[in-house]
Each structure stands twice: as C-alpha cells, then as structure tokens.
Image (cartoon, rainbow, N blue to C red; front, side, top):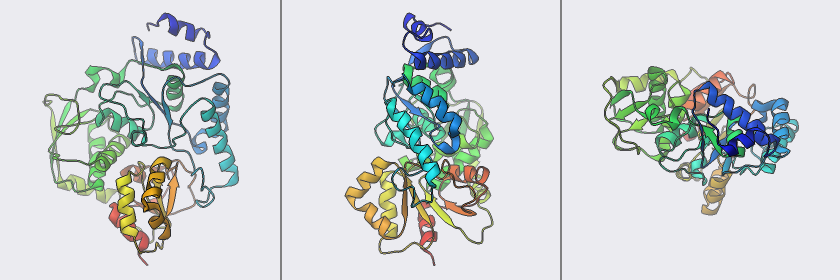
Length: 392
C-alpha cells in the first residue's frame, strides 16, 4: 500500500507512539482489504465506549494510546454504559460507574468530544455528500452512508480511534464508487406507516439481501425518524451499511436488473417475529438509535397529565436532552415518572439479569436484547410503548 512521506514518518514513530500504533492498525487493515492508499477523513465517530464491552483490557489499551495521542479531526463518541449524571437512578453499580468514568476521562484527554450518542449527526457531527469519514456504530454508519451520502466503512473501536489520531483511513469498501452501486432493485408494494414498519422493512431486507446494496423504490416519503429506524435495522439483521431510496437519498443510480418485491405480508411477518409471548413487560424503552427532538416532543405530549406504571427509559443524547429541558418537554416527561437515559442505551448498558421482558419501538433493540440480554421482546410503535408504560 502506497504511503506518503508524512505517513511513513507516522509509521516510523516520528509523531509519537500512539500515532505509530494507529498507523500500524490502519496499514494492516488496508493490506487485508487490498487498499491502495490511505485517504484523509473529515470526522470520526468512535465505537467501543462502554465498560461492559471494553473491560479492563480496553482501559489498558486506551491508557497507552492516551499517553501521547491527540485527535486531529473532529471526533465524537458512541454511547457509554451508563447515564453520566444519573447512573444511580438507573441502577448502575458504583464499581461499573468508576470504570466507565475512567474510560471517558481517557477519551477526553485525547481531545475526543464526549457526546456519548449513536446519532452524532443530530449533535453537530453531520458530514456532507461525498465526505470521507471513519465512523463506528452500525446505525450511524448506515445513516451517514445512505441518507447523508457520506462515505465510510463500519469501523471498530481500534480502527476508528486510529483514524481520529491520524486523520486517515484505508481507501476500500464504501469509500470506492464501485462498491456503492446498488446491485438489487427492491420494489416496495406496501404502505409504510411508521417507524416500526421501517424497522421491520430493515429486518426483511437485511435477511434477504445478505450484504448486497439495494436501490429501493416505492417509498414516497420518509422522516428522519423513519430513516433512522431503517438504518439501524437493515445492518443489524445482516444487510449492507448502505441503501439507496429513489427520490429520497442523495446518490443517483440506474435500476439494477435483479429485483425483489416486498409486500405488506413481509412487513407484518417481520413484526410478528419480533414479538414474543409475554405475560408482563418490566422495562419499556425508546430511543435506539437515540431520540430526535421531535420524538421527545411527541413523548411529552403522550405523557402529559399521566403517570407511568412501569419502568420507562427515554434514551437520548445529552445535547438533545438539554434542548428538551429548555422547551419544557423534559419536565412533563419526568413529572410522569419516566426516566431519561442520556449518554447510553439498553444495548451497551449492563442490564443482563435485571429485566425479563421489554417493550421497544426499535427493531435493533429487539435483536440485541434478545441475543445479548436474553430478554423477551414486545415490538410496537412509540405511541403503543408509551400507552403500555402508563397502563395500570
């Protein structure tokens, strides 16, 4: 793989040990995937933040990199394993909190913006069409590739950090024009009504396409929240972290010859498959990926003058929560007895064994809470989840 003079100096350790290790990671990755060169990136989203995932070995690696490592491009951070301010209210142990804070302090030392959100595009890290970036977190990668038209592969924790410290990433995969072209035409013969329909569509496509990039036709309109839901589910269930929707997403392509048709029964079957037989739900959560301000507003309207009778978590970035505070949405939500889970989500938090059955409007949340936490799941719209939480 070709390296510039400056990149060779990085690899030789002229810019410090952290940059040297970062270059070793990126060069190894580039050689594995046949990249011809490294390219500059405009931003980074680092995954692998929760102590539940990293453990002590992760802390040791990050500590070593932080001795002389500093980010050189705007860099945001994925959700942590707890709410940084209200972790006690959400049942997180002191031992876990101590370790999690160590991790975040290390990232801060390296100059990372401690956003702790899976929706960086809602809090200022929003790339443009054609921008090369290096992002981790599957839903954010898919949203940025598809909806925003930026270019990134799904980076792991070490490779995203390496890109942040060097400002570079190997040129392969979805950075290349040839790999962004759709190879399957998907005709939607169903009226998609809400975020769970889009989440279910993602499940159907992920399982059918098995990593192939689709061009989707038949969707007349889609909100940010619905595209967020589709982005999260399609990649979770085995699809490529890139899709195109005719008339909605920015990149333009001719229709591929191969085609599949998705009907209403396919969507309904996917929704049915995500619903277990449950006698009682003991946790309701929404915000996977993290809620938009519009979703927070809707939740406040649904909870006005009501009281929740189950544990209800609203997962959101700290920045969106602060805007919600100013608009009065947070007061309404918290007065009803619901809890904000800022900076985190039930996928990366240490929840295994604490609950038995959950309700959520996230298809991605269903997948991970079934497989990671062994929870039974109830998959329903935002409105139905809130109704379930307040029902006596």
